[in-house]
Image (cartoon, rainbow, N blue to C red; front, side, top):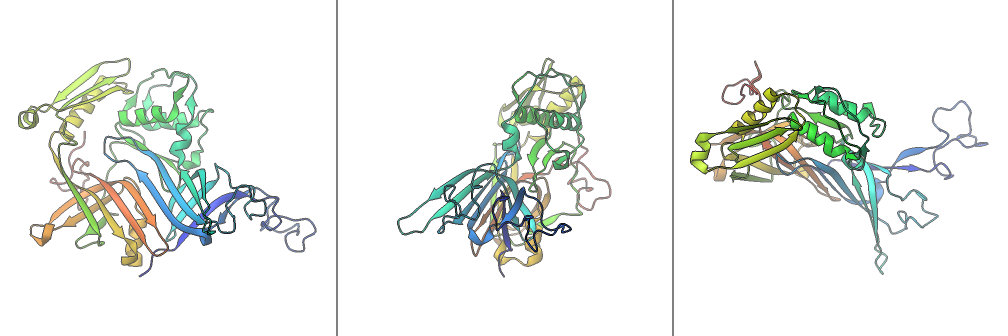
Amino acid sequence: MTIPVLKVEIGFDLTDNPSAPFFRLDDSVQGRLDNTEYRLGGTLLYDVTDFVISVDVQRGKSAILSDFTPGECKVEFTNHGREFDPLFETSPFYPNIIPRREIRVISGGELTFQGWIEDWDLDYQPSGDSIAVAKAADALTVIGNQTLDAFTPPQELAGARIDAVLDRPEIGWPSTLRDLDEGAAEMAANPVSAETNALVYLQNVAASDPGYVFVTRDGKFAFRDRRKAPTSANLVALGEGGIPVSGLQVTYGAELLFNRVTASRQFGGTAIASSVASQNNYGVRDLTVNNTQLANDSDLIDFVVGYAAQFSEPEYRFDNISATLEKLSPSQQAEILGLEIGDICSVSFTPNGIAPQIVRYVEVREITHNVQLTSHRVELGFNETRYAPLILDDAVFGRLDVGILSW
């Protein structure tokens, strides 16, 4: 088997380049007035795959209580002919080897990354073996570099608040590039100060629900609320009886053990919830969440009680797995490449072949790709879903020992 077909595209504005596919006066083909193929000019995505040496993509976060960091992509290109040299005027891409060019990575027909190039690094060797490296980031970087003007929002659900912030003129994020859940809790009408970082504020709103914001692999700004409901319909099975994995890491400990949770509302009250049984077993372990945007004390109480229940016991979890795509069938490759942050997988594993088998249902929180000319390795990081809501009539999450009545 082979690796999935790789395609890398970069957005170049080659309007003035005579070889670019634009309308040309007096040209017998490109100059026809009734043609629909050749536009007047502008930025187009150009296939640069023939120059690619390797691709690295990293999206997600390292732990369930962390914020998502901007997705990153690094592409190495051969640069023997100075094609990616910003000073080389006869490059077919001149003068577009500059930051802020759009870049897309597609593997096996699935978008793996969409973002904007932040830096170009050039490595010239005396032998002529030269490499250009494009370093890109997704839309979290764009929004993370924007600030809000002073305003006071109305009381509204978290999804509506995030939508309204993205609509603001100082942000202006396209409505076609959003994928927002409604939200489970009302956000307060707290005034927002001028020069507030837009991403920090949006992350605060999301974490107050509590949920999270991230950018999808096709470039959409996404919000998932706490009521995101997994189903078994699109469950991807990994490990024994499913897609083979080439590595699996298990963690079990106190990293996510918290049995006294304190949270406060901005300009409001404070709530504390404790698990006495957990404190008796493991000692007191504190988690503090200050200045949530919650509007109501009842939601704040639900917040601390829910977290105290969720994190009061040490967790045995499959933290991450790796898959070597060239060892998988095309259909298995497609399942892996189709995964998105927040998707649900089952992982089945019998340690050292000694029964009983361990089965866990996990949520994808991190996706990394390393693509070389003849190999493609994917690593998936997971959160446990033992606190996923009970889904009636679902074959997996409708079982009382898997789903729970969500807070």
